[in-house]
Image 1 (tube, one colour):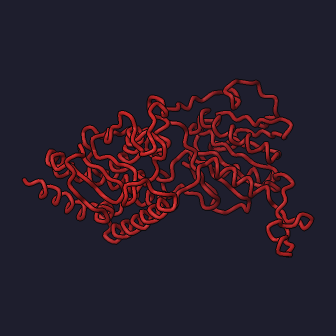
Image 2 (image 1 turned 90 degrees about the vertical axis):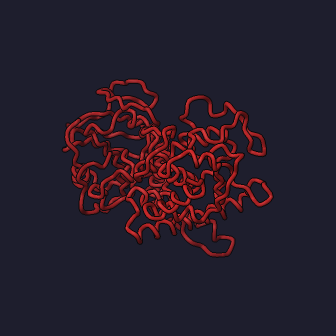
Image 3 (image 1 turned 60 degrees about the horizontal axis):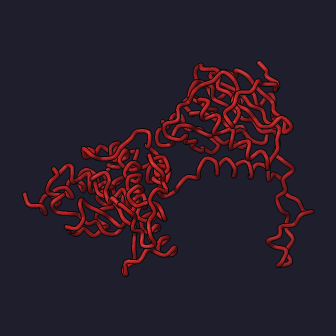
Length: 416
């Protein structure tokens, strides 16, 4: 079989079976490059070694092509910055190979894949990989010491460059990111029209086109907006004073009581609680509030009230029954009707209220959005995804744990 024939058959199979990947591929220029060990892309061009292509079966060539276009879809050629090229290539492989596997493609024997990295961005995985992230430095031209262009042997990526071979400027990089976004939307539309856009890819496109904020940032923004709950004419909006226009500004008198609901059905371990409470306590330094902690599995198992004088807020794992997300809202309606907001730490694997309580609600979920069945999606509020570090074991503890990891006897009011 001729090499060009094998590549052509792989492209034809992509067009027929995987139109999303095919549409992205057809936006790129394909060219032979015998200096490349396997294959490589810079975002606009896909170069391949014909000997490498010839050594693979057609279905394996299909995987290589999809693998390369997914590097482009994730904008990896635009995001390396000062990171070591070989290590970032490895992180990029881990970030996309799980998605390709879920889409029904067979991974090459040496392809890099770890379940624990599913759903993480290349930048996150880069930090978690063995060895020091700063162990190798790259020079101003982006060339790293002992650089390995394709650690997984499935096709690598390199920095996007302009027509003169220079790294892209900030403006050019933003323009290229916009182009990739349009390509993603067009590819998804083409696959959707043929009824061949898997749900996992659909959700992925939404994440790439409309990237979600980190859960910490969402939590901080949520509390900030909840605290800024009134207008004040005594402190006019400074943005408009210069123009002689006096408008009121938002002023914060501190948060109204904050209700923190904790799912204790066994899905939330002490590791997640420690991670969440550390961020929450940091935010509460700026927005002191009375905090009502409500523990619930299939029913309310206990409540704790914490005043600013009793900070830090401490959370504990307990309960271990079934999951019902409705009781905390019923408890709030009866006990804290003046609540300023409700923050619910949960895996969302339970029935939530049908009716919006009229209180700003943030669901901090340990279940990734792409893994959450539609039947469990909340009818109101915003959802942020809490992503613990890979390899973290959620060790459930019966005693309260502070954010620094030390046990401390509880002295706060505990109500059964």
